[in-house]
Amino acid sequence: MRSAVRKLCQQGVEALRPQKVNEKWRKPAISRRVAGDLRKAAIRAGTYGKFDAETGAGWDPAWDAPDRRHPLLDAVAAVDDTESMDSILLGTNKGAIQSIRPPKETKRERTRETRAQKIENLLKEADEKIEEYRLEKEANKPKPGIEEEFKQAMKGSRY
Image (cartoon, rainbow, N blue to C red; front, side, top):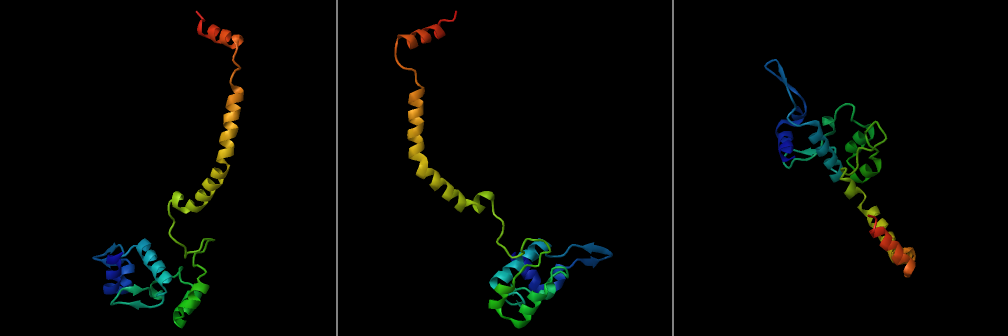
């Protein structure tokens, strides 16, 4: 990420675009994924709409791909009011998923709170279930007597 910021400071928008060198196309210096991460970080930090080449903070809306540009974000960048930006961030994704959301973590991390609540609820019922299991186990045991001893002896002497 730091190298991408450095390239943005040095080359500007050219770092985000492929270059034709000696009749061959070269990849952009900054990949779309890294550019997306930088853009999202700038929106979260409230520096979307302005870029400081000395510190490398921010994101210039002119760098957005044409299909990613959102008129509301452009309006907010023009006004330079970061408080209203938070209320206007509707997302630029054409699907139902908003583009401004925290990075997806592992399944374990995403459901940690619900898992903890589920475990706590199960622990509340644990003592009752343990007692019920012990009583059921005791009820299933054969009653002592000569009949049970005879059955056990017959099982052991098959041959």
